[in-house]
View 1 (cartoon, rainbow, N blue to C red):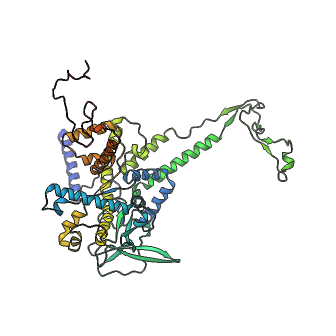
View 2 (tube, rainbow, N blue to C red):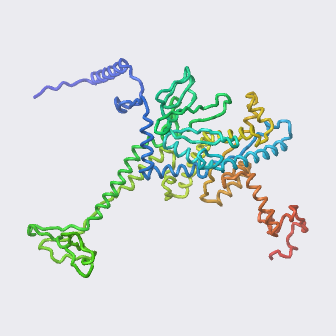
View 3 (cartoon, helix red, strand yellow):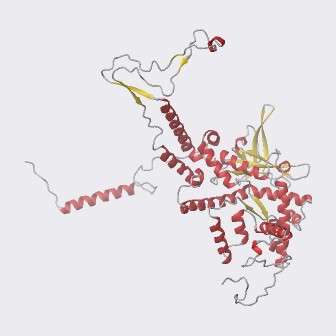
Length: 551
């Protein structure tokens, strides 16, 4: 019989205390710091990316755009909602800066008048592809779509201003990131360096871009400066497709961090489709029992030589040794099965019953990464009205940000260069602008003339009646402006809406109609044909003496 060594409670407490003291001493001696791990090694090895393979990312992104319906579908939803037919300019000269000595209303009227002139001139220019596009193919709206699409796929690209020698206005060229490459033998100014085809100065500011071109089979590199050496005008600038770190020179494609998921889900989809097709081709199997004679061929008679009937074979004899085959036809019955043989319908289990759920989970994760509600990316609205409305509201947040970014990244610069050149050429008469352009101390005047707002697509309302009522309530309580609500509901400015309404009302009056918005509560014209208010002959509050009063 063994002897048991029982320890007292104090001994157990002392051992436990010593154990934790040793653990604390080991932690202190090993200089442990917080690194996010709950226990040693739980996060695995730290990945440190010394460089980014932009070329591979671009090629894989372009490959998925070509091959994967998931990639193309998601990017198309982004482009249609972000760009649609293009952001629309609305010039807003700042009256308080340009006419500080004039009456507030007079200055505001001048700002509206000049703003309309600038906007109309720019729209004429932007919608004429022979004036706007260097290749003479795209209008401004189409040019925006090309910039955004290729920046998303290639990570970046540059917009280049070329001179139209006929009228002096700029023509615009887009060069995607695939063609911006490191030059083979190129020297740059002292203190400058070239990284990934981009020349940087000592402050890491972009100075020039090197575009690779092919001239009669000879590879050449063209240096395109960012600013004019003498004029200081904008010649080119880089547009990025997604966010980047401050020390990154080139941009990554939008799909960079979901390339693997998109590729694998596309392969899985193809495998399931192929498996389903192969399964569907197997019509039946023949089940045999132990007593079935070996060597039977129950399906041998399903394909048999075709009888040679009529002049068909005589007129068109087949090749030597060729015998036409009669294939199995629908409704074929097995009547010569051996004992123990049984025809069994083939039971298919493809596609996988969980395929749709798995595919949906992967697509949802991709959409979440790209800031797109899955319902909008898939155009599949099966949730409740409130859930779908909230998804739409979340997407509106994304679109507002993208409108701001797209306007800032390329639309506003193009607008400013047009206004500058049009003013210098005398096409636009803007008081004080040319002087402010030449004198950097008058930068406020220049900025006031170049002020412009940009409107994107007015997305269709799910419940227009509710949205209009909400807009009216907000206007009645002073929580919004007419201009904001007009842009939200139909994408037009308040000035555009009221100007069009005036033209339509004038036309209706000429035709003898009274617009509903000009009728009183009784359906009668509240204003005469000249726009004056009609007289109310019944000045009593009691309607009992009215002929048409309902008893």
